[in-house]
Length: 579
Image (cartoon, rainbow, N blue to C red; front, side):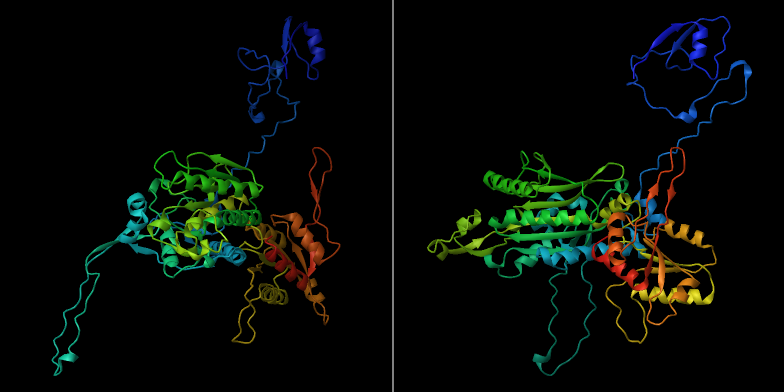
């Protein structure tokens, strides 16, 4: 917009700006399309100007008039602050922290529910991608960390434990007639004090697992997955909620493969990342390839170039936009990082796919293969003469984490959904609200809870169904409107209202009782109502109708009437389709 400057008599000015009239006594007027208190500041255009809060503007009245003919300017609604997972975690009783263990969050039952759902989701995908889950120790001797290189390069970020020398009670002398029956002297090879380190990562333990058996090229690739807790000695000032902690869990995975299998394994890992992130609602993520550092790297240039080319080919095949971060690779291999943004726009590195040239050599890992020289170059041959020569080849190791730190990813999920998690992940899936507090209605609601949650115990002992749901009941004496508001504030995904009418409908033999169900709290409304339409044809999603500018929006009834069996089918569908 451009400014215009006009010089004109007051009569013309009065006609141009009425109502209200501009009153002046014998003055010539200089009119400007924009003005401010104090000396005027001249601008050629509005570009340099910032938007101002209308609520801070004042209105002047001529000749002491106090009547306000202008419509009062209402303060604009303040922008909601960006969601903070710490605030959400406290409001929903998901986790807490304590000075007795800084950087190690205490998960409440509902927070543990989310954690377990995430790990169960990943475990369900592992068979399709060829991963087998393992369990490894939390603490290793200093000698192992020296072998892996962590003691020299990572010790300051590790927690260490010193084991004191052994103290054994003195043996009680016993006489035997036969020297062969004399007790043998106890020998302890571990009597000297030694330092241990809590593991900050799982790769050394997985190398030990690979090394524990003789391997053939036919056995590869071998894929290990591990959810063991990890510990890293973060400085106190950096600790923050779930995003920066000292004790955490990682969906850690390591792939031991032949050099010729690297490209296909990287492609499968990228497919795994895409599947998981689209399911969790992070469609917009960035892929970044970090290449060889300029100095302080191990391996030959030929190995690095071949590895980077394989990563680039896999990235191109993924049909996902990616960028390059030159020289930012680890000293032992190039890597692919997955970057997501939180509610403040801050970038977080979550998933990673990392090639490692160093660790397999440090642990002397190997597998038997024909034509070992060609095998090591990623050029397996079918020549019968060459294949007669067998030899040991060092496998390629791929570090892979899809979510990264589960604690940090939980924080991103809570902020991304503003605390309203999808049904399959939510710790508050269903709540049953009673219209009245009379005994028949309350009894019906409690029986309905057992039916919907799949936790009814009729004849003990009886196994609980493996698929259960979290269902609560609010049978307080509050009004139904108060109960609905309370349920929505607690982020329940599905609200079921029951009353005497529902009980009356259930008295007919062979008929299912009906429920009034509200699913407007579901994050993905379109897919949720598509599922309802399949279960109960003719159901329509709630819509908003604009009744004109300046008027309120009228929302249609958000509820849908479902039979109990239809409600159970909907819950099963939302879980199976990760909605």
